[in-house]
Picture 1 (cartoon, rainbow, N blue to C red):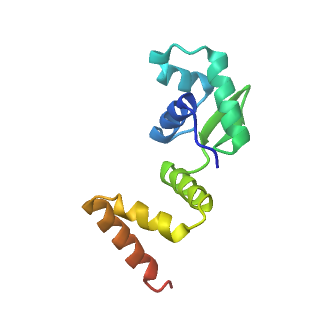
Picture 2 (tube, rainbow, N blue to C red; picture 1 turned 90 degrees about the vertical axis):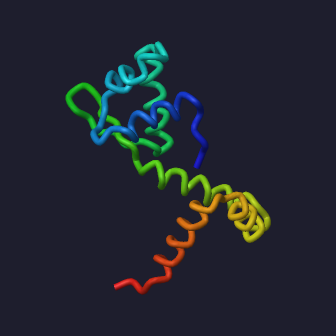
Length: 120
């Protein structure tokens, strides 16, 4: 999975913040402070769709875009890909854990404990 560029990240932030599929015009309005051309927003959304980061559905003549996965799932995939780049996953994981603050480490402990619970 590729990391997002600055403009792609801004577009995805808009989509992740909303609970409904958005048109190019909707996204452009949300990014009005960037003064982007409509075609620029359309191109970014089209590229994100081709990368599989967004899903789109046709509504009349317009496409409506929505995230293909949650922000958390996207970041998780980036982390998994990054681990695949190392020759020593254990060392990379250990370094990652050492970089955590107390509340992050506690959240990780809880997630690991929940994962160990029997599934029904």
